[in-house]
Image (cartoon, rainbow, N blue to C red; front, side, top):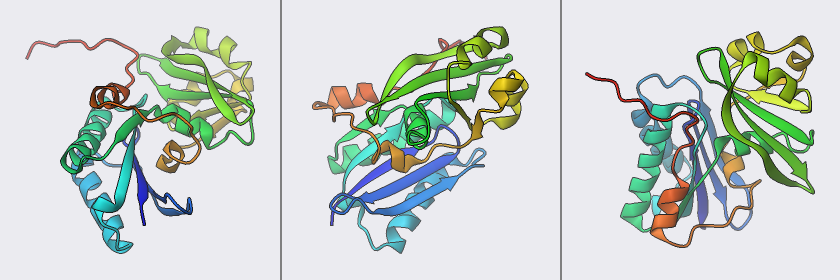
Length: 222
């Protein structure tokens, strides 16, 4: 048997393993609170799941990594783990936005879907999608918006998805609060609900895995 694997570390850890022949979800794990143990937990989560199902890591024929938005550190650690495994085993890999996977989980129940993350500074990181004939189209690329900017835009969306309930709800108007759904990324949707093609070269694979950042990096003197 051959398998497709997916890992998302934008909010905690989500690891999924799908049988490529039957499309059966063999593994679907979500761990929310990882603290500073993300790398150790990734390693143990993957190893324990493979051992439980008697699957060799060599039987995984491709990997998908969630690229955010989300935790800066988590995204970098997750990407490094997947690329390290794939480099050692000569396995193809690709990056898919975590927000797209979050939207895909609710695509059957809504046409216009917004994914919201805590952007700090009383801002929300907003990504918008529209479901057109069972295909999710990005209508708004990820950006950080202030409270007075975000609410008028969200009026046009049917459902608002976020892993950060308290912060997000505090910045939403009452009508928009009623559309809020609390959810964290499910890595299986990085595989099963998406149709993105696979990069054909190593450089293209590497480029696809660049984390989504909505602000430029800032250097701070030590």
